[in-house]
Amino acid sequence: QARPNQYIIGFALETQNIEANALRKLNTKNCQLLVVNNPVDESSGFGKSIVYSGVIERGESSLEMKVQSKEALAGQVIGKITTFFNK
Image (cartoon, one colour):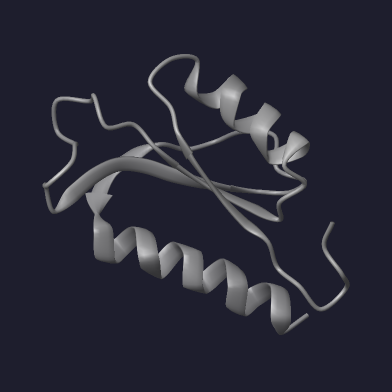
């Protein structure tokens, strides 16, 4: 359970029903943000510098997955955290 000054980030490795499973996990894990990764996409996977991934924040109803560098994904996560604490 998050306290007012906490920002809980969950991570999900999804290979099927990605958006539905991500939304379910976001709510059941009571996270503010869920980072989702699909390692079986042909352009993504373990040991690669790019991933098929996305982030979804509490209150959002859809997840945008895209092929991106791990650095770009990290930038998304940092941006969401920064926005949360600057409110």
